[in-house]
Image (cartoon, rainbow, N blue to C red; front, top):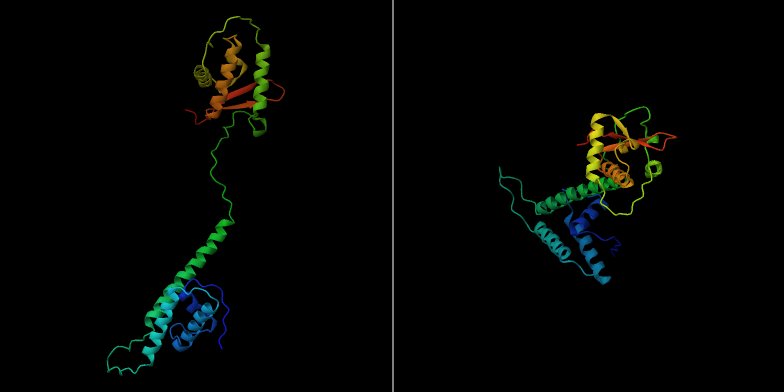
Length: 242
């Protein structure tokens, strides 16, 4: 009695390839009688386990029995000069070979997928490092927001205290101070933050100018550096700034 205990197959061709590989059969010369018996036994095993037999398995079983019957029927001898006699197994062999190529290709793609899953792409990072301006322009000297706030507070503390009782609009805007900074950088390679207030005394101008510096940094138009022991920072124009 033929006993079978197999993993789930993707289809009837997959099962036929399993039988051919298991029994080391020649795919070009399939022993139809043996492989048909194994295939039908597998279907019976599925039915005994109350598993639904897919229509494609039943169709393949009928095809195998049809091929087996045609091979058992007497055939006329080919006449001299005629082509080789048609083999009823030819269509099945071609389908098996095509399925085998597709399955092997899918296995190679799966291995490539595993290899790709083990890779960690670096991704794209925009170059944000400014060009070196002087010997102090090193990553360790580039400021954090804390450094900027210290410079901001230092300038604010040193500004003359002007008392006012009226609420008025700021005499400058962020856009105007951004243009002023870029104009100064058009004249010099570097300007200090404190040097931007030679013409203004109002604290509100300091606030607006500091906001302009942050906006220009966010838009990658300027770079800032700090120097140890100095409560100020220096501004320079980035190479690709508009």
